[in-house]
Structures are given as structure tokens and as C-alpha cells.
Amino acid sequence: MLRGVPSHSQPRVVFHVGGSKVGSTALQRALTARGSRSKSGPFRYAQWRADGSVGDAPPSAADSLGGYAFSPFQISELAAWDLRRIAAAADAIVSRAGSTPVVLSNEGWNSEALLLREPHALSRCRSIFGTRGARWEAVLYVRPQAAWLESFYLQFGIWAGREPDIFARNMQNGHEGMWAERVDALHDIGFDTVSVRYVPDVVDDFMYGVLSLPTGSVGALSVANRRVSLDLLLLMLSDSRLRPDMHSPHVEFLIERMGSEWDLPERPIPPLLGEQVVDDVVAAYSDDNARLMTLLPPEQGEAFSRDLNAFVESRVGTETMSRAQLAALPLDHEYMAKLSAGALDNVMRERYGYGLPTADDHWSEALRHHPLVSRLLPQGSTRAMWAARAVDRLR
Image 1 (spheres, helix red, strand yellow):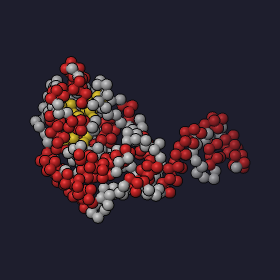
Image 2 (tube, rainbow, N blue to C red):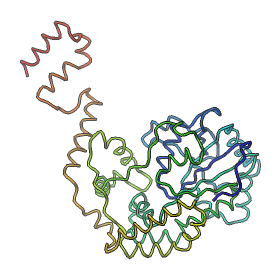
Image 3 (cartoon, rainbow, N blue to C red):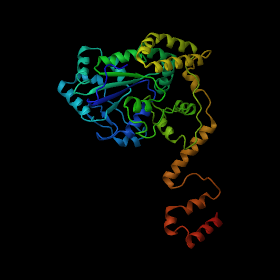
């Protein structure tokens, strides 16, 4: 839903406020990698830091384990700010916008907005969003709630020891996933424009649909986050060192980077929410979804309803799986073998210059290509040839 039409003469400040937790990491990676540090780029990616200061998102974050930067600032803290500090933050954000937008991202801002009901807090928020001659826009991506709750459970709830059905019920009670409510809340805290969207590719849509960048102008884009595989999930459930809490996805990030190189199998996670829980979820969100249909573009609303119904159909006759039942599933031996070989090979290459033996002549090959040998015996020289023959005889 759009309230008002953005003026091309005004600087654009675009807040990705998350929503469905689907594609947020992929989007933040794309924003981190492609955001400019000048007003002449396609867009400028800013960071609202936890201490309230504002700066450009560090491009070095693209090389970190997670591969992205985001804005950790909690907008609820604005309630305790004075007007001078709010004005300084607004100026710091808007000053980064020129003829191209400035973008900030935090997938939790939509939930915070829902909790800001006290008049003083709303007043403070309104004094920053929609000020300083800029157009302040919020972008909320949504997803059918039953599928979203199952995905969200695997990201957070399971690591807090919750059961899937109890987690889903608690989320409903906290109005998480009430997308239409969130649109209202984002308007209430002062955003000029709130866009709610349901698309298969969040990164592509944000770059070309929201920011209106020329198609292909920011290069190849990642379509979506890779979902954790069953065997990695089982490993993390069996050893808390691999996933000590819901906010420590470091091993997942590592496997996401190395999985293809190590050729790890990717078994899908079986259905967790059974037919009865899914039916209860659909009923709990029916009124909010009816309003959501009036906010989404017609074709996106139709896709939302179609995908919701398909998910419901897929769970007919299934039972909800408990955390214990999930953890008791057997590990794939092929996965463990490839994970171990890949990890050991990486360590050996990093520490000793060569990896696991891959052929009968591995050791002679390792010697031939060792940096010291290469310096003493230049490749192609007579000395190098005789040394290689000697190594082969000794082997």
C-alpha cells in the first residue's frame, strides 16, 4: 500500500523493515556488496548503529563470515531522545541521499513499530520519519504465516528449546505475522510511504521494483538464502557448541559458503507443523490476511492466497513433529564423510600448504609444487626433472 506519491525532487530514505524474515539476509548481503559510499552511486547503504550514530555501512562486512551489514539501532530508543539529537540523526541520514536513495535495513523494525503505542514515543518517532525535506519510505515483505512460522522456528525457536506447536501459538499471541497490523503501525510512527510486498525474489524486487534501478545495473543478484539442510540441523542439535543459541548462526554461515565446494548433500527438513496446527494458524490470521489482500498489489495478493492454500494442502494428514523426534532422525553417512574430508582438507591447505592426498603420487606432487622447491628448482629445469625422478623412486 502506498500513501502518497514520492516526489522526484525530494531525497528518498528507504527503510527495509523486514517482515517475513525470508530473504532479509540475502538482501542485506546485496546491499552491503553494492551500496555506494558516494551520492553518485546507484544507492547509498547507511547503517544506524546501536549507539544511535549514523554512518555508511562498512563495505568490509561483505568479506565477513555473515557477509552483510545491517542497522542494529532499536527505534524504540527514540522515546528517550531529545529533539536536538533526533534532528542530528535525521540530518545524518538524509545527508547521504542525493539524486539516488539512501537505504537502511533491519528486519526487526516492523515488530518494534507494533509495540510503539505510547503518545510520547509516537511523537518522537514522527519527529524523525518524514522530516528534513525527504521522503521516508518503509518496505515490508510478507509471507503466508504457516510456512513463515515453520521457517522462523528453525531460525530461532528450536534453539530456545521450544516445541513447534507451542512456538506457533506464542507467535500468534504476540501478533507476530499480523502483516496488516504492521502496515498501520509503520504509518503511525510517521513513515510517508509504506509498501507491503509478496514476491519470490526479495533482492531483485527491492533493487529494481522498490529502488527503480535500471535492470541489470547492480550486476548478478542472489535470489534467496539457502535453507539449512537436515544433516547440518541434526549435527547442531546434537552438539550445542555448533549452535549455542538463536543468535549464533556462525556454523550455518560457514557451511553456506563451503557447502558447494565440499559437495555436501542437502537433504530437506521434513514437515514440522502438522495438519491441525496449520489449520489453527490459518484461522488465527484470517482476519488480518483479509485486510492484507487490500494492501498487496492484486497479482501479489493472488500469489499469496495460492501459496497459502498449497501449503495447507501439503500438510493434510501429517502430524506435528516434536523437537525430540526431529533430533532423533539418523544422520546421512555421506554427509558426514564429505564434511569431515572437506574440513580436514581445508585445515591442511591452510597450515601446511597442501590438502588431503588425492592420488598415489600425492607426496611427490606436493614436493614438486612446494614453494621452497619451486624457488630452488625452477620448473622445467634439468635439476627439477632429476629431483622429481628421485622423489618418484623413493616413493
